[in-house]
Length: 364
Image (tube, rainbow, N blue to C red):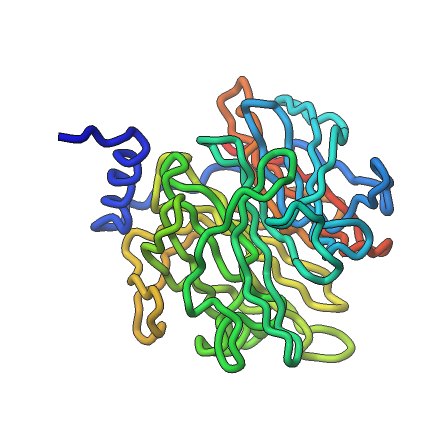
């Protein structure tokens, strides 16, 4: 009999756990404290690029470096990522120091042309060290460009692409809304699975969130090699405050996913960013459990049971000087105390009126 590879066995075991037969017993939320906050200077030049638009962050324990992706649509500089180092200790964090940058390249080996890509989240593959990254696509009049999950080698060169569900393709009356496509992603089950989330509801899934009510995003789980396995309805919170002076301009959406535990295929942290012009931002991190949710892969939401969630932290409660447009999060190094560190980054939209924050929390 032909021997199956270790990778096939791991994937098979992980698939058997998605979804799990029942939700786990409730567990008290961990205590959270602010460990440190760094602000990167607006318009910082690094190796001929403008640092800004940082919409995703990941940490590699193997290299000790952080990986950050810019959502620059190849307008200021070619679409790119950065590497950086930051000392993290029990009593605080050191300054973030950039160590390198590389352009993300197309399958032909060329940089992305202006407005041809919209990078959002980036994750280090725990098996190969390659980078999986999402981009939102485009819906602008007659222009309909699908979102995607692409894979890059550490030198930025193209290494492949994962399939996306048919219901997430840009079509005239279906697919994601403009700027609410594939924003968030994470590895699950030790790297055997890959999960993504839309920022907001698909067009057939109902209206976007308002101050009067929330909305529903979709979390998709697939094998790391591509096959689509499940999709779940994730309930988004209402917009936290009415916009001023013009009402109805705020929104709430999912901007990052992160495995709650590297080996758990069903629990993820979900970063919800709620913004309202004239009323700043509200950033909350929830722990979501996929175990008892209905699989709605390529199906209407209907009466599907949504993902269960509980609040982990509201950034208004940790003592920050300000809360800006936080879009990315990653687990950082574990502290000698046993606490886990959660590192978040804000996207300044290349706007000097906003800030790029690197926020580090300690979770006991």
